[in-house]
Image (cartoon, rainbow, N blue to C red):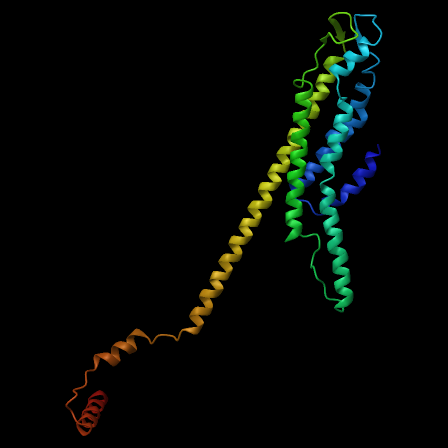
Length: 272
């Protein structure tokens, strides 16, 4: 399989990924794909050839090998890497769709754009990115469970007993380099677990950032409504003026002529 083609295809995801997404992609291609291509395939390359059982019965070794290794680790890991990396193509496809839609909109509306940044995680793209993370973490966890279920753990036993037909009795079977295979199995399992953890961290980061943005938007809207409400209400008169006006008590029985005389006398007393 041409893993370099898949790497070049997924390298564009880095432009739209968060920090956790970039770390995840680096881990997949450095600690999983590189180890898989360079070392793991060679370790399991002689698996069926050096599988030995203490019998000369024709067909017994083949049946026992199929029973002990129902699916090769190499093929299982290849399927896992394909399934895990494919959800990232959903994000790339969604961004390409936005770019195409934006080009059509620009052509019809004389240069104005539909999206300021087609790769920004807003609206539908945010949901596509979140769903891709859920798929990646689920596929990794699912394949880890399948590996654990098929091989009854992540250990590579040196001795396996087989009593299937056409074996004449219970025979002892041995695999080649069990310790080395166990080390690589644990390494791939730990790498998958770290990738799951990075996906969960990225999901939490995206959700928290979205909640923070919604809270900030709601706070800004409340402040705007508060400011508009105070602009519409008339300003209250100063308290000093209110007191000066209300503190002067006018006798309702006084005539207009007496009031004018009282005001004139008050003005003369102030001048003095």
